Figure 1 (cartoon, helix red, strand yellow):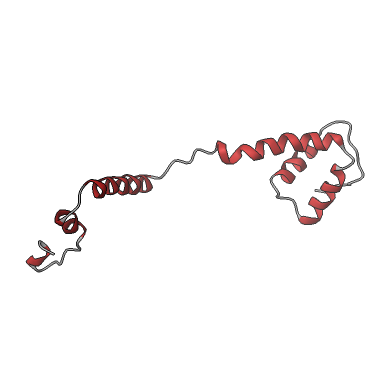
Figure 2: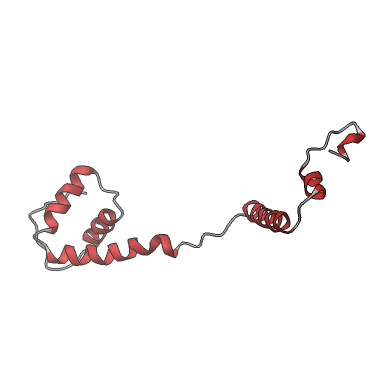
Length: 111
C-alpha cells in the first residue's frame, strides 16, 4: 500500500482505516511502519484513528473465549479428582492405585 508520510488528511478513508488497523496489529512491513509512524506525528486524524484501533487490539486477548478442548477438559477433571483423592487418602491403597500393573503375573495385585 503506497503511503506518503507527508500527507495530512482531513477525513478518514477506507485505505487509512486499513493502514491504521495494520499498524495497530503490527502487520506492516518495517519501512511502511516507519513511514506511518513518522506520519502520525503530523496527522491528528490518523492518530485518532489509530487510537480507536489500538483500543480494540488491546482488548482482543481478553475478548477471546478460551474453552478447553474435550481432551484437555477430561485431563483437567481427572487431575483435579486425583489431587483431591491424594490429599484425602494416604496409605497402601493409594500406593496400590499408583503402582504400575505387572501384566502376566499375579503380583500386580500387591506391590
